[in-house]
Amino acid sequence: RKDAKGGSRGQRRDPLEYGAILRQLGLALNDHEAAMRYYRELARPHLVRFPSRLIPEVEEPQPEGVESWQPGEPLEAIDWFETVLLSPVVVPGLTTVQRVYGRSPGGEPQRAPVDLDLYVDCSGSMPNPKSQFSPITLAGAIVALSAFKAGSKVQATLWSGRNQYQCTAGFVRDADEVLRVLTGYIGGSTQFPLNVLRDSHAQRTRSDRPAHVLVLSDEGIDTILNADERGTAGADVVRQALQQARGGMTLALNAYAGWKHAGLEALRAECGIAQYRVTSWDQLIDFARDFSRTSYAEAAA
Image (cartoon, rainbow, N blue to C red):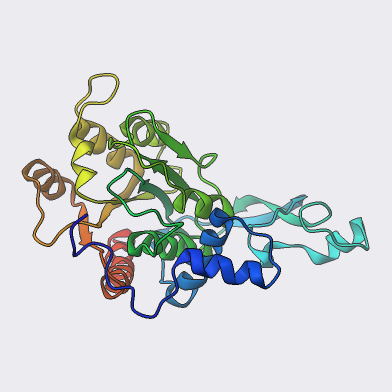
């Protein structure tokens, strides 16, 4: 990779050193689990306001019962009264429950969170986030955890070459599941998973939440313009997906200064796709703050 990529390490420990320290403290974590914890801890102080949309006709929540609460879901969602009634011995994920709400007609407008559709490039040209600090991975962690804090659901897709990808089970509220994808690594060739983008939004309707598409990549983002497995041009797949998603799109790229691709620039201009260069700590913090301001304003419009 080019010298500008990856940024300056400074005095920050890398994920392997962080994991070694945790294991010395008695925590039984493998490198992947340590990396998940590493980026979560780095992201927490920098969470930003995540986009939401104003819903003019609001429905009021109506309690309908309880369901199992699983580790990774918001702690504040636990219904402690019902949990203790179920069992005086609290075992997270086994006896913990959360209240389920239906909807009934209401009166006051309210804001509803925008969901996040996250695509993480882990081809051979990208740094392995489990072994070295990756600004682009931390940028994704900041945005994803900010989305969870706002009440959004997140879908994460780890991708490398054609048909080389791993996804969460759709749009989820499980931060651990998303961080596991975000910190994964395949290290193969490069081909953006157009089929996942297409299929993720094909059935989305106006009654569904909007979803913002965020892609973490490098110069390999130009593969988004290739044809999908059906022969459809990538630009057409993107146009249709964004029309269905209704939440906009952002590219955060670990690319060299001044990098541009004519075809991608044309698509960005047509679809209003934002692009940021994220190769250092300062750039990722600026990206997170600007993403919050820009995306929130667009979503509120």
